[in-house]
Image 1 (cartoon, rainbow, N blue to C red):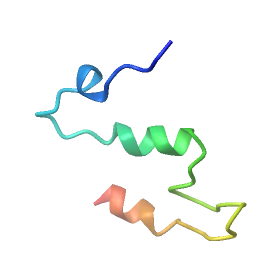
Image 2 (tube, rainbow, N blue to C red; image 1 turned 180 degrees about the vertical axis):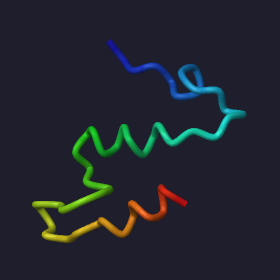
Image 3 (cartoon, rainbow, N blue to C red; image 1 turned 60 degrees about the vertical axis):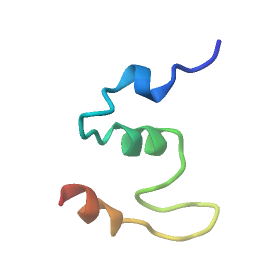
Length: 50
């Protein structure tokens, strides 16, 4: 079973932040500590809040 195309799930004319949350849920560590690299990405939280 393949994933749905993003344009079928979200309206391309609307601004959405769903992609950011999806990537975090998939353990890509866009926020917080990345155990593999040892880097901290907490500064990105401010980007989302803005």
